[in-house]
Length: 406
Image (cartoon, rainbow, N blue to C red):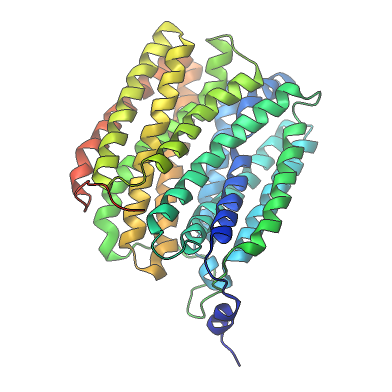
């Protein structure tokens, strides 16, 4: 009888431009659903009568769903294959869209956020590895950049699409999720172009916390500083920005709110693609410096209640987050043995999403006591210091910082 591993080889498709594009699309379209509520929060707050604290809890519970999914399912694709896990992620994302579409109570929003978090956890671990596996030989660096850009870019596109559709629709809290459902169905179709390696007979099944190979533990600790800084900043922007724009700047138009939040993640994805040829040391230095300057601009925006400064801070913060995250992911996946890649990426995303959830919960609690402006100032200073720490650790990356081929 053929083994699982042999059957997996029989199903293997050759890597191609189509398979790479399909895998990147599946990753991006699921990640879109995780941020779509962000520009809709002012409308949701009016409908369900909740405030800043509930908004941050809604964001944090999504991150909790991601973390739970990473722990429960992070390495399962090694045993059952990539496509089944990607299909599960697409299905959970469809379910989340359905809950938001039909949700008529605040509790339904929490259910929708948990479902989108579970979907994101599957895709961040399995989807990232799938993009790497669907690249042609010699295109490893392009694939690593595309994997992280699809993840972060999907977050930005979700906000942009939801804000734009809500702005022009007579059903602003429903129409964005109809559009997203259609995009997810296209993702299911695209899934059959994705290269499938099949499950490994020796891969563990069931609950198993991810483990780091000894060879990457030191590098992981160094890379995690940048991931923590970047994802904490992204969490603060995504969770507090709607309330800040509506209450401090007096801006509540969903399209504009979606654009401003997209700016962070769009800048992140663009920087990852545009600067992928540079070495990891150069990327960490540029990313750390960009993130530190972004926090200074954020302080100015908060003190002056300035939308232009806030836009500049968002864009520069996105560049910093993207470069720090890409450099860390690229270095780790390059150093990890192929059979350990899923566990390494799962561990990296666990650190990243813990960095989102904990600061967001703390910021939400603090904002109820001292207000959004003071909360933003406190976190801007703390995150600026963390960005400088990432910059200082750049020399610990292995390469010389010179430009390298894709």
